[in-house]
Image 1: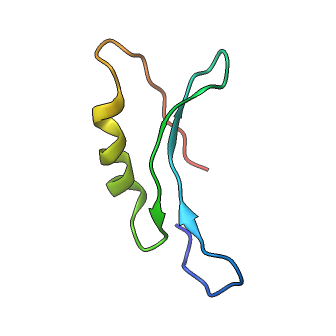
Image 2 (image 1 turned 180 degrees about the horizontal axis):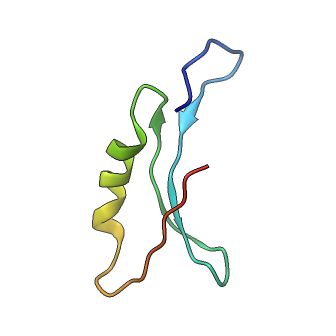
Amino acid sequence: MTEARQGPYPQVRLPALIECGTLAVIAAVFDSLAVGERTLATRLLPMIERGTQTAGSEP
């Protein structure tokens, strides 16, 4: 987990749904580092269409 640090630029957390073949961005959400990845992932769930195969990764 990334800790929020003061810096010259605002820091955000940005999970996204990416199509594997074309690398097209299907959907993305962002918020400050104070908001956790799981919270942001739940915001992405409604954007996944029924029948879509998904794979997750964590850096």
